[in-house]
Amino acid sequence: MIEKLRAPIAFLFMGLLLLSVGFGQSWSVALGIINLCLISAIMSLGVNIQWGYAGLFNAGIMGFVAIGGVSAVLVSHEPVQEAWSLGGFGLLTSLLVIVSGYILVLLIRKNLSSLLLRRIMITTISLLGLFIVLYFYKPAVSSIESINPAKTGFLGGLGLPIIYSWLVGGIFAGIVAFFIGKITLGLRSDYLAIATLGISEIVIAILKHEDWLSRGVKNVTGLSRPVPYEVDLQQADWFITLVSWINHQKISAILNLTDQQIYINQLIIDSSGLYVKICYALLFTVVLLIILAFSNRALNSPWGRMMRAIRDNEDAASAIGKNIFKQHLQVFIIGSAVVGIAGAMLTTLDGQFTPGSYQPLRFTFIVWIMVIVGGSGNNLGSIFGGFFVWFMWIEAEPLSIFIVHALTGGLDFDNVIRLHLIKSAPHLRLFLMGMILLLTMRFMPQGVIPETIKRT
Image (cartoon, rainbow, N blue to C red; front, side, top):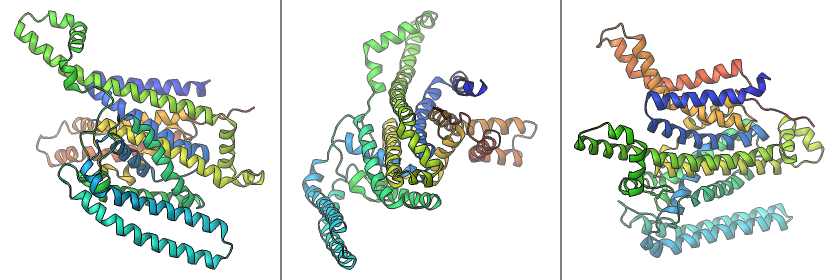
């Protein structure tokens, strides 16, 4: 009975934490945390699909998040026509050569039985392809990056609504996961973690240095939104009327007309920010629920039972005819695609793409804590872990400062120890994450909402 109540109690506790921020700090802060928690929950679901379903330890999460992020740029940003006219042909030719070379290599590996001849031909095609690609690629990139580098210097995108990038981000991340999985999934779990972490660093390094693609470290700002802009809401009659109607009693209590107008203007400004964040929250919630529904359906299907059987005992699953590599590749692609969707959503929320903000070692660690604390193998547990861990990550700094002030209240204002502790308080969030992980592993080793196996 207690086990069945774990999920309701956990989410009730999470709701109380968010309400405490709304009442104690501000509803704008609370909604901002909720939006990031929703995105974190989707990332956590993606990792849970890989680890909780199949036991794949993917340490390259941030690489797929970054791929989703750049998808938002490629879909929503307006195309830079001059860049396409000067360098588009060279880049498309380079891409065509790479794809053609890949297809030729696959055909040679499939049809040539002689190992020596196969190696000679693959080496020849690779070297020749590299020479041709560089011949077209370098001049094209130089031309593109020289076009008004302060504002553009890249190809731009398709100029479509940014919400389409959520799906495109998942597709791009899945395609990249296919090629990465082909290379790495034959490795043992510890080597797989090292390999995926290294590839993640490579992906992020490419996005940082290939300015023609997404301006590199110069960042892409001013991306479109799937929700209204605050300034437009503040000038919309329907919104002004709505805000005035909701706050009618407070406005009526102010007798001075000048003060009343000032109060209404401030209400409209504050309410526009809240309205935008609520719109984001609704969109993110819909995506999360859709992914959760598909994840649960997959987990409880014959495919999900097969994946858990492979996770628990690969040798036994292989002995009854299951293709372990193929199934691992499937689940690796699906989980990476979900993470890519979350990456596109994060860039949409930020309104900009900043490759320098993707830090694999730090944020991969946080996402893994979400899965472990929530309960690997349980989708609801992963969602709770995404909410709780990200909430604690955001609120750790003000909480640490509050605790330090409480502990050093008896010391002089300019006391050296007090000043040092207050200065160091924001860094306690890493200590707090470690404590949460240790306490969970000690008292709830299977997570707050552990995996449940349905026996048939």
